Length: 201
Image (cartoon, rainbow, N blue to C red; front, side, top):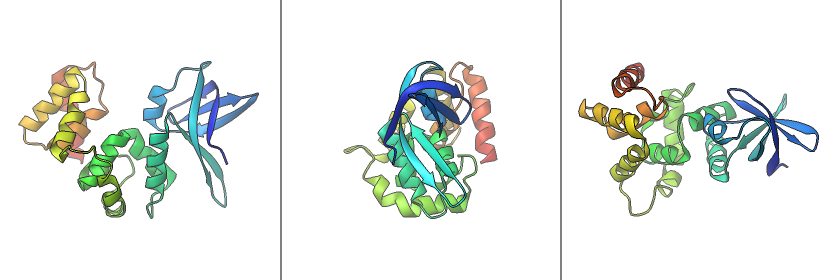
C-alpha cells in the first residue's frame, strides 16, 4: 500500500519517527540504525515502508534505505519472528552483519539482539542461511568479511575488538560486542563493557 514516505520529521523517540506528508503526520516504527541516519526534527526525509496488518492493529514500519527494508521483510518471513524481533535485530546489527551472522550460523551472536532467544535465533539461521550465504560479498571468505566489519569500526572500537580477540573471543563475537558501544569511550572502558555483554551472553 505504501512504498515510501517523504516529508518533514515532526517527532522522534527511541523507536519511532513521525513524518508530516502534506499535513498528515504518519507515525513510523523503525530501527536504531535508521534513527541514526534520519535527520532531525524539521528536516525532510524519505523512509521506505512496510505496512503490518493484524486483526487488532495496523502498524507502519519504515527504514532509511531499501536494503534494510528487504532484510526486515526476510526476517518477519521466518516462522515466529514478528516485527518487534526483526526491529531488534536490525537495531543491533547492520544488514551486512545480519547476512554474515546468519550465513555463518552464528546463533549466539543473533541472540545478542534484545528479545531474541536461542530457539528463535536457530530458526532464523535454519530458514535464511542459504539465502544469506548468497549475500555475503563475492570472493570474500567468512573471516575476511568479519575482518572488514572490524576494520570499518573506528579507532577505539577497533582496538577494543582486537583486544577481545587476543583474549580468546572469536572475531564475530568481538565485532558484535563492540558494535553498539560509544566510540568516544577509552579502549579500556570499551573492553570492560564488551566483556560484560559477552559474559551475559
